[in-house]
Image 1 (tube, rainbow, N blue to C red):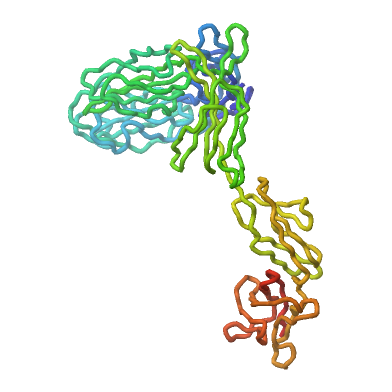
Image 2: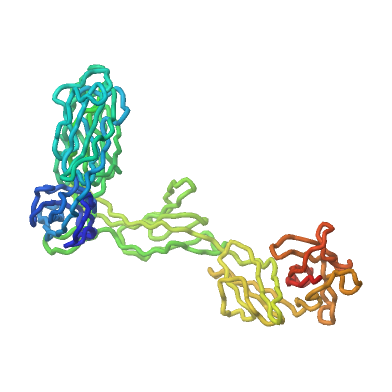
Length: 556
């Protein structure tokens, strides 16, 4: 079924792209488009390979009921094609003239253009025809004047163009609503008189041939006067993932490792110093069934030869477990394991179901079955890339307590190459991913940091002396001799705390002062200037008790 336009859709744009979902086990699609059910008057059985979309080169006729028929194509002669029911939609009623278009070949401004060149241009949505003018003097039409060429995208001048001359071209799209003339002129300059080579055709495999080996010898007819050949190959008429306009100076080549069970489309364009051959057509061939998936011609079952594999994306191990032995439980005829370096190069490390992983990094696991084909034994592999990461027991760097009135916030700073989780007071948890514990009652705690990969647990005791007692909540630096400085004042509860240094910050985290516990304290100024009334923050560092954080008010 079409995914766009949906069946019975209306007001569909005339330049719409038809799309459909892939059908499992189907290697290729053939599309026909017409104005009657099963009709072919717009597109007649165009082979699309494994492409899942199609855009008619000239668009759809306006305000018309359109029928799309897709044929499921198999390469095994014993399996007949499946013709799906036609889907239908109605196109929009175009009420405006089409926009002007541009030349696609020769390009605007091109030079040394062959005098026998055809003129090509881009499709203008909504157009039902085109008029072309060509001249050696702008606007005169002295080569061809406003010629109606119909609904096509090319024009072949009757005579060769004059050599070494600037040619001016005006293309005017039109429809029943008129046109947008005058469209702008474009131009190119021809080269000296020269002879282009002719086109060629496949000799092996022949055009339309099926059951072609996966590593075929591709050969085409040699062309007299050709200096070389530009070859493009893709798995749909619109792609070039195998070869993209690659130049060959002989009329043959090997192509390694085509995918099985696909149609490939090949365009070969001979060239010489005069330019490329004009109007060379695309040909196609289909590879052997290979690994599938495909439907068994006897049972009708979907056959998949590649093994099914189950393997994780990541393997986590402890540093002291290297090298680490990993095993596959998948059912397959053979196995391979590869280590991948930083440049993407693969090194084979095992050909059994087990592999020894020497270090963290990226690896690829492959399992395969084999099948006997006309061309020989074919491997059908399935692979999985995975990463090996190592862990270690954590190191607790610090535990910070932040004042929240009668409650505190405990923040644990831990480091290491593991993936860690955190708990308070109970080694069995519950553990949480966050290293911050909010609104915990003031008191003593034991914090636990556990490696998620099982490499161990570390703990640290937070004693009662990690308290905010002794740090004033406010001070009034007004020069009256009372409460003019902010400083830590030991209490009976905090008498055992040995404060080394206290840092004071504004609410944006800017360091304002550093005071020693034996000094008078902070006078509420920065660089000699009194600071305004506001909340300020402190961090006290104790060698025995970690860090103590909190805030206080400056009042004036």
